[in-house]
Length: 99
Image (cartoon, rainbow, N blue to C red; front, side, top):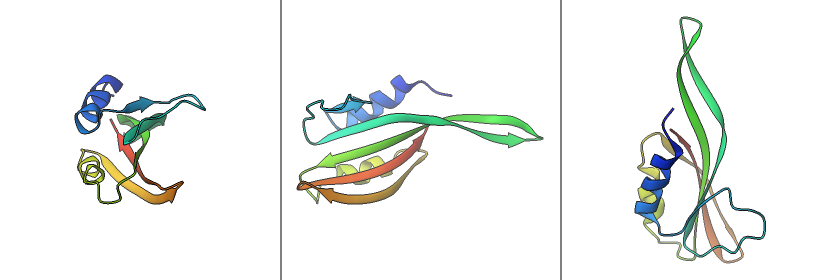
């Protein structure tokens, strides 16, 4: 598994406001990326764990529905967009990323 610091560096290249598992009630600055560790996925080969990946849920939040950062995030290796939604006039883009 790669380091979370590597992921954090890549995310900071895309957005100035990046938060890892912020506490409830924390004041966010938009646009921002919020990400959290959700587990470890193992890929088996010959009945043993051949490769392991750290799994993170990532949400990009912006006021601009045409913000291109959402596309740049989706282009990261081992990243896929799950869903999008709007809440309180903010646009949320949800991804799953493996490192």
